[in-house]
Image (cartoon, rainbow, N blue to C red; front, top):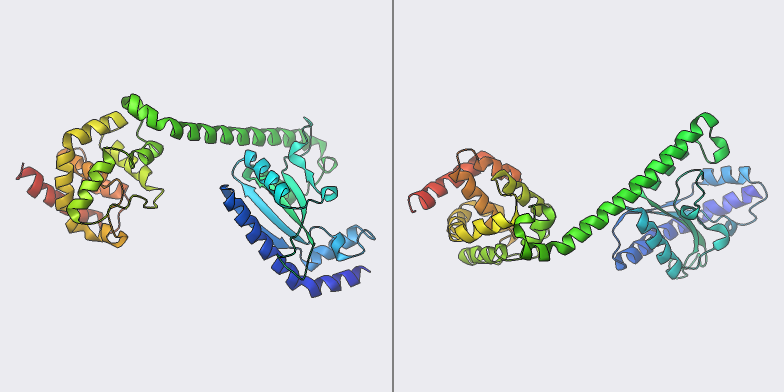
Amino acid sequence: MDSDLLRAYEAALPGYERLRDAVVAHTTRLLAAEGLKIHHVTGRVKKPASLADKLRRKPGRYSQLADVTDLVGVRVITYFASDVDVVARLMEEHHVVDWANSNDKSRMHDPDRFGYLGVHYVLRAEPDLVPELPGLTYEVQIRSILQHAWAEIEHDLGYKSREAVPREVRRRFYRLAGLLEMADEEFMAIDRLSRDYAATLPARVAQTPDSVFIDAPSMTYLLGASPIRDLDTRIAAALGVPLLADWPDPERPQRLASLLHYVGVHSVGLLQKELARGGEDVVRFAAALLPHLRELWRPAGGLRPGSCVVNYGLLRACAHPDTDPAEVVRLLDLSGSAAQMADTVRAVYAREMTLGA
């Protein structure tokens, strides 16, 4: 009987592989539509050798391939443990769950439970995913990154149950599981604090700008606000190019923050005062400098947000002997020779801002 199942499985393997690809694509679309940020979604098809081993270990349990619920498996790895529950509820809402073969191990709250596990569902495939395999079940595992790390190491050690762990190491296992749970909780708390911080930035910048530190979140907000947006718009007009308001560069706010720290600007309030006092010089300097560095901005088709901050930093670096324009170029990770760009910056500064002052 087992040999018949193996032959049937090998013959149907291409269909199972198509089901795996379809389910991974379907799950990815479902998560994206919900706006969830997921570490990764992967799929696998059980190897014939693994199926043969399973049939040997559990003789007589499976009379047909449909009885083996994990021939196709999907794994969803989230960044945070709280998102495991969100994904789990999403799976329940959009699929038929085989509850007899599913379990939510994350809800086993015994204080001495073995392991640190996620959610395991067996779902029924929608008929339109792979028409030749209608109603086939597949396995979905949902874990956070830390749950996944625990499960992989635990599996590699061969400890699949409490009884498999020697008593001498069991206590360390429990301690480690507790540490990972605490780490997951701390990561979730950090995520909440970060989102709360970003949400309060507009009010804090408006009311107490001197108390707001220059960092990536505050720069992300400032790039779309006055005075940076106004000065960027003026520089773009002077160059005759559009301002790329939605330019996709997630690292740019962090680089601009590093640049401002280098030239001694650490608070939003100070930056606003500096740009209010020297905004005209920033625009004049940028309009004179950027035509000499077209290779930095022309391929983008316009001016990137925060260009006034870049030119302000270059002005500060040229005006203060303890700073160096070459370091500004390095901090911004610009292409080309940092030394050559720095020489161009110094030459334009000497011509436009010193002699013309």
